[in-house]
Image (cartoon, rainbow, N blue to C red; front, side):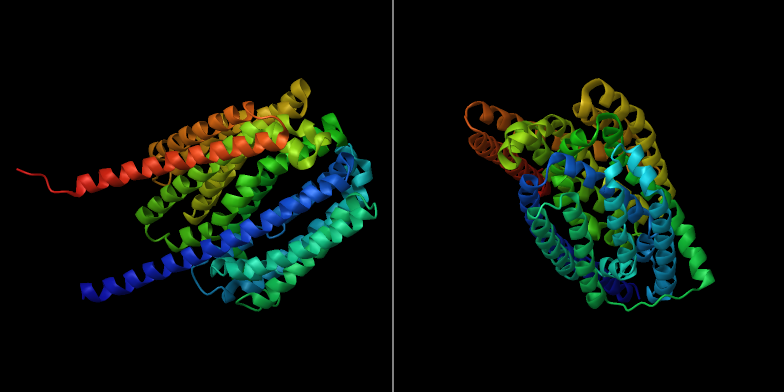
Length: 491
């Protein structure tokens, strides 16, 4: 009987491994292609749209991001984690999400002038109202999108994101050439959302019409409410800086800061998004086996930090020549905050994986504690930084909080699930040493070159090669040690 039960379990594990691997491959293809194209589009738009117009758009984008973080009231994550048939909760979930989205948009439409004045950009009112329509559109396919994530069908999401990006770029560049300023970005975002949503609707494994089951609604709200609170705090963490910069320093400084934050997010959007699109679903499939879930998390931290820390170190070393070469001399003020925001980018990769682990482990309230500690320490740090050192001070505040507040609280939350903080710190220490070596060599490379392109090329290449060599040597050493340990001891 024992043998009869072991084989199906092994088959389940193998099936999950195949799903995760396939999901990761498609997620990487998706992220690499869309982020690469998006980078090129941003470069083009940076030469067509003035920094002040970027500031106006950033205000609207911040508000839209808030609504997007709240409009699914945590139900998307509940659907991904749900242990039963997703069709049992899909209709009720769709109704709750649509209701929340329409309510949020109504509140925003009425408060848009107030929000724009508080952020010191009153001209953003119309752009804000237009851009927020995409929140309602997003709600129309939120459940189908969650079903795609749940089933690891990342190739369908890739099609959706590429369709979104193709339409966005066409509309944005076309309108920007005709001098539409921030309206070009707003209309393009709306059009891209529609295009991507249509693909989601046609490729999702389920078809959903709104319905309502009181029992399922209570279950969804019970699990989703803490995630909604956590999502709000996540939004606040990632967007309080825009509010502080806009209110204290004005729209021009906000435009420079927005670009710096966008560049610093490259590791997060490229590396972390690739993994996060399968991590919650993968961890959730392992929730019955805490030991396997623990090992999967440590492997994930090792993989992400090994890649993200050296990349962020290169951003720190190359920030000045990179910004001037790619975006032009008029954006040079973005280089200084970028150095500190790159530290934030590296730690966000780790923190977001920890967030998914806590959700999958059935501890959504721990994510609220983590995000609350992050937010309430961030507000004074960023405000003081803005007054003392402008947008550079805001970046310094971010780096201080993520190292001395967020990391300790995250380790505490993980420890409550049975995961050892020491094992996480050991992995991060190794990745930090790797990143320091790569970044140091990259900086030295810039000192032996003249011209922005040469500095980026020489510094980036030398730093990347250094990191690759260190990783290869460490891997070879571990492989040799494993072989020696496996050999029998002679007596």
